[in-house]
Length: 161
Length: 320
Ligand SMILES: [Fe+2]
Image: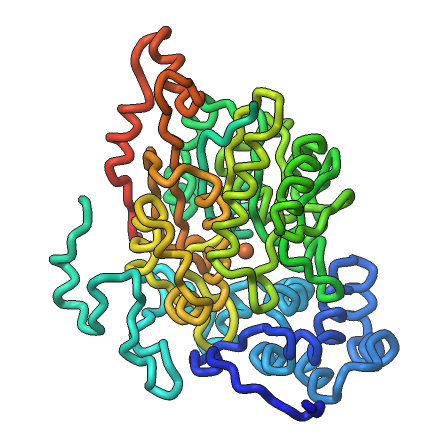
């Protein structure tokens, strides 16, 4: 029998910098996400902003200590680790009046400007960002014919122009 | 009988909705995105669908973490825009098609796809942004829309294969509906993007182009992509591209790609858009090309021209 502590290994844990919101995280993050959901209402946003700790303690007493701290400190990656989902935590960012790219900058450890520039340059490349263990570092997609990590040859790739 | 004449894929980036709502579509950054849909608006004005089936996902608006339906079909008469935290989008209420929706529900469930049915549901940017991109900002949406919400928020979403097969079942359902209706099916979301964690900002254009190529020519190949591969190559949130396969499953095996557009970025996301038409079979007009039907009588235009124009309008990696 599986105990509460059983942790099944997930193949997607190998993807770096990624917290896949699966049923385990959803279960553990339930109150965290429900807190974020409560921020959909203007009156709740107001109450939260007036006294954040009080709001959490009174309305979401089942938050874990870690979750509570991550919320108050706006630790967005930590929230994801503790079962938060980005579509929910984004509501907290919006409550603070931040555009989404502010959150993205926080999560990626950069400034909002640097993050925006990264996107304008075409985003974060997948090469070098595939695998924590290195096992899939050179894995390519089964649908991309030419996907050697070296970009050189790709110019010659047949693309209907 | 009702027929699916075409399929459309479109990203549903919330920032696109915000750009529309805040009248910022003329800014160069956004122009680049909206320009890509100009021809699409002409196309759909000519195609004049009687009903749109909108495959999309909810983003913690109508559904929370309390109940997570994998496939939720909207059978209501109307679907108000959801308040996503800053008031509902100022877009028209989506009018449903309860009769066709109920018919689809019944047919598809008996075909062993266990849908959740929603007689009351609000719809978020996931559905309304593609409607804007295709129809602009009219006072009322020009036709009824049947929303099909797919869970792609909590892992695992349905497999690409399951989505593809659901598309086939939907097509069968539509074709057994007695009324003559032209149906266009939208698959929304994508393309590559990751908006969470340290890897946020991931874009994989090579993968996106390959996905688009295969969507037209060899969609079965796409049904074999594992979620792991999709997330690794196209980003944790890019996995939502499985929704496009519902659209594709509802079309003929062989289709005409009449338009394609791709640009990076819209906010944090690669925007991909494609229009696929079912071929017209024999003498039987599927109305797949109302454009050509009309142009036959009103002077030649559009369809072939558009196809050439479609000859790769691709704007990529624009710098500011
Ligand atoms: Fe989405």
